[in-house]
Amino acid sequence: KSKDAKNSIKEIVKNTRQKLSVRIDADSPSEADDVLISALYWLIQCTWGLPQTLIGLGFFIANRKRNHRMYHGCIDTQWNHHGGLSLGLFIFTPVDSQSNSERIRVHEYGHAIQSLFLGPFMFFVGVISVSWGNMPYFAKLRKNKHLPYTACFVESWASHLGEWATKEAAIWE
Image (tube, rainbow, N blue to C red; front, side, top):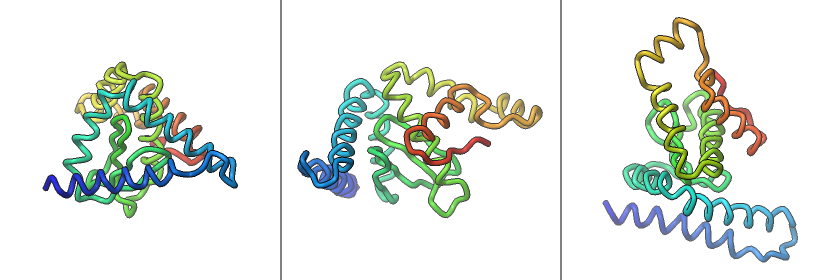
């Protein structure tokens, strides 16, 4: 089992090294910019966002047999849940065949951007988000008042940030 995790991590490190080996004076300025932005993103998530990134690494290892891909600097793991989770450098999203999986991915990336801003204080966003999404009281409130998931300010903020950063549509329901 640990060999699978090591191989998954080695593959991601290999891909990251390949991206970082792009010359700064590359033919495409945007390619060089993308590499620098990704490197800065990883640096911040592995320092200021270290607590959530370490927890995300644990989830990544637990889901090592799932499909993984890079998504705007994040490691996106497709898992067998209907919702998503964002933990620093790692996002966990439904499989592509699920409806709205792309929009959920953008939303979870928005949480990753929140992590860049808030660092270790992201814990409070996590508590609010998990409570809003999973507590029966809030599920009943959303259902009875016909509130979208993004009625909670941290969820709305995540969808806005995800759309801003990716230029893709996020989930709003």
